[in-house]
Amino acid sequence: MSGVGELDAAGITDPRLRASYAQARALNAAHGRTYYLATLLLPQWKRAHVHALYGFARHADDIVDDLDSMLTGDERAARLRAWGGRFLTALRDGVPAHAVDAQIAGRGAGQSGPAGEVAGEVSVLPAVVDTIRRFALDPGHFAVFLSSMAMDLTVTEYATWEDLLVYMHGSAAVIGLQMVPLLEPVDHSALPYARDLGLAFQHANFIRDVGEDLRRGRVYLPQTSLTLFGVTREHLAAGVVDGPVRRLLAFEVSRARELFRAAQPGIRLLHPTSRDCVQTAFVLYREILDEVERADYRVLERRVAVGLPRRLAVAGPALVRAARARRRHHGGAQISSRPPR
Image (cartoon, rainbow, N blue to C red; front, side):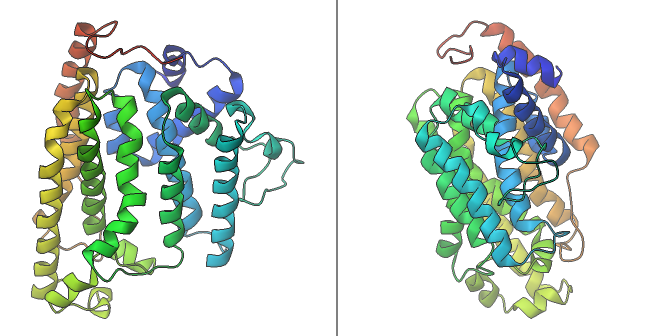
């Protein structure tokens, strides 16, 4: 179904909100790949809200990591504070969702705001605020996420796994927690599994992106792990995948697999119309680890990926199962699958 159809199915009629949701959907389609593909397995009315949450995370990440920008770290931090502060203030003050970025739209053509937005550009924030209110999401999850994004501008490495988990709680675990109400869990027992799944997804990405992150000046593998295998930051920067580097990455792959194993039982705790979405994402993100191993851990100078044929092979049967689940549970079963009002 088209983006317009998704908005119609969700009962989103305000033109300003529809434009914001469309912008979030475009970000997910352009950058999400596996995330976007999995989103298509959800009931139509849920998809726009997942796009909104993705768009929020993506825009914050772009502020921090826009490699084409000439901004200093302090200037990026100021933009992130301005953008995040406006969002959190709107939530706190009850600003109508469609009016969250009215002050930006009111500027003269070509003028930019303190968060770098240009007048006339469509913001994802109205869609995000609308989604938070429709599903009664915890605003604290979004504040913690923004705090972790700010850490990316000042922290370049983490001493221990426990230290890294502090960052990952805000950058990944809370994203899993944000998603749970949209996925309609059987009960609150799904929450710890959602947290572990967010951590698993991100740690798989950290392993895949070691070289790319290093070029941004960051290492997301614990320094204790590097020390254990006799690897230094300079060693990684040299781009040579030797025995110590392979052993380091194999160790982190095993850690990521443990996170996936811990998260998997939670999929059965979701509404039947949500399970194929999460299962597809689970399989494809976990297969990033397979691709790292298949590449003999050569991730310092190139980025491995699960290929399109494989993604389609996983998603194709899941589309059929998801459609069957929607027909079987039309109108709601144990949990309503109608959009909240």
